[in-house]
Image (cartoon, rainbow, N blue to C red; front, side, top):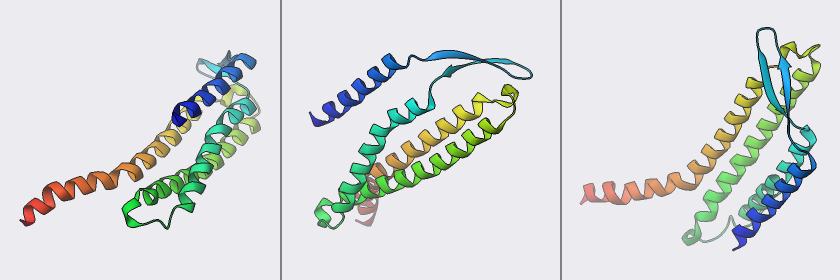
Length: 156
């Protein structure tokens, strides 16, 4: 029930955001082609991500506080690894985003604007974070299953 509440809070925030700042199409004419991109206010996009950052910070703090629990409850250790890696990944992604934004703002004309680079960087960052989470949360479980099924049966 708590998870449903968290998702509903984010859903309400996104609906209000879209109602206040409706996305529109921007035409970008570069040297060889014409590209239409979704034009959004960067501040609003950043504000929409604040909720996810707050959830990430809360999960990181909670995992840090539960780091010394018994081995019977070792799941918190893997959640800690996942959250620490997500925080480091967010910092790296933020630095790349800042440099990419400054590069675009520093260009003299929109002829140098390349929206595919932004999409590719965004997709790679999101895929990297998702891969880290899946790896840290499920890789040790898969190893335990492999260990029980194959290593112990081979030893017998």
